[in-house]
Length: 252
Image (cartoon, rainbow, N blue to C red):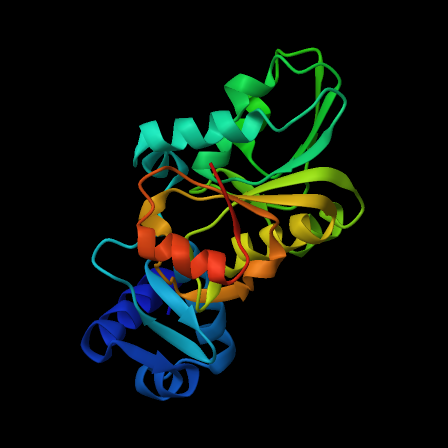
């Protein structure tokens, strides 16, 4: 049985059960556990299901693991404002990490004017943005290319990041709450965020207000992993209070 047929059967099984573990899928579909695990990861990478510990669950009707260009069209004004403020914190000669988030990408137009800047990134759109900018040096993180997110992920990417040090890291997030910290839709993106955070002197979290108070699928870091939260002015007052009670510094 080829992958297309296995893919169809796995998705049909999840449609009726919402969530299943590898053992259940293996018995129900008469497919080896090793093959099931490999197929589940491939389907998760396509955004067709959500990988869980030991199995998978059905994705929402509009799965939030959207392509980079789709994400860039969500709340563009807020993202541009956040990106402009974040870029104002970068100084001449800085070495910075930029992740593949669409809000982080909004920093780029403002960074082009900073001489001696060195950028370490896993974002292909960021690399393309600086291809013709002579005064900015770009270090593209190596690893596996995620075509949907237009980014580089994987263990080799994490090892690459761990080989460098930056003055500042600018990272995005899919969900942020005072109770659960930082959450993500993808373990791969979370690994990149954590690696950049531990290798930078200062960590800035770029997050529009729609994501604050929301929890996503994968909890990957406490609030202490970043130094400053850069968001927009529409963050609800109760969320500001809850985050400040956890000693989160909010900009602006």
